[in-house]
Image 1 (cartoon, rainbow, N blue to C red):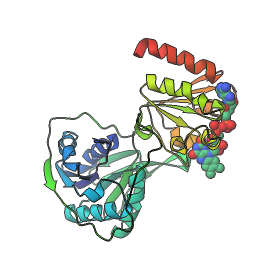
Image 2: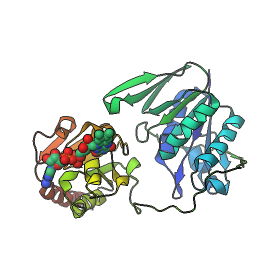
Image 3: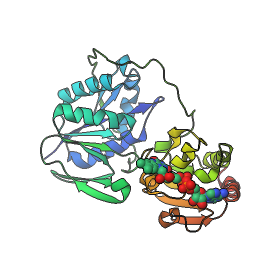
Length: 322
Ligand SMILES: Cc1cc2nc3c(=O)[nH]c(=O)nc-3n(C[C@H](O)[C@H](O)[C@H](O)COP(=O)(O)OP(=O)(O)OC[C@H]3O[C@@H](n4cnc5c(N)ncnc54)[C@H](O)[C@@H]3O)c2cc1C
């Protein structure tokens, strides 16, 4: 039976995050010829309608309230609730980002429905929709399906291929929402990382651990990341030692990344770190200790001093890429 799907698209710094397109790709898999709706929030929302159409949305709800320019739980919850009530979807997809992780459980509780969170794949055969999600910090995977009511899932970035844009277009639905009784407002956003590639969506991540030894020790990693068009990440060991900011931490209690290439330099490979990067497509480990556990999951291992290996890699990549 064809489905009515609603996808929450997420925009930041004037562009849609890739995971919005990945969520639309998931929507196409399950829609079974039905209607794919998207919603986008904030005063710039109308700018994204065409792009969402190119990636498969049939209708885009534009909730252009200025109160939605910066995320607050209260405002986004009220807005999304009103859109869900209007669209009445059978299936709802939200990106598994900082925003989605905060919003989805609250919405599920208020809608009195289940939530399958952090999915990395979806297979649909008519009404049989099966989601795959990692468990035990990525050591195993489980398959889940909703047995009743709304099918509601959050989608981990960088796992479901977004597909190519087409020249299809979407109908724009202006949908100003009523937002009231906000208990919190954001007065100022202070960014800890300036510019650069967004770590959670980067195609290449160069991560440093305690082996980097100092804040200055991250400089060669930054250079390599720049040459590769990637982002710098870190282990908790490096963050705890104050070599870098916690916003770079990858792992169970940090960010989860799934880049095409993950370079781990001076990282031992503790299970809590693996939880955040083990689904990377290609893993390269650089470590002085040939027994370091990171080599067990690495596709390519370099036993050596990172301060020698990283500059060599940077030079070689520069020759072919710059
Ligand atoms: C509840 C909980 C949650 C946690 N969450 C996270 C998390 O989200 N992310 C995370 O990363 N950790 C997390 N941890 C911590 C985790 O257990 C490890 O302590 C941490 O990952 C270790 O960081 P590290 O690999 O940088 O340091 P170490 O384990 O100290 O490893 C440093 C490595 O660098 C190598 N090295 C040293 N010098 C060089 C050199 N010059 N060149 C090459 N290699 C060199 C060493 O051989 C060693 O293998 C968590 C722990 C707990 C208990």
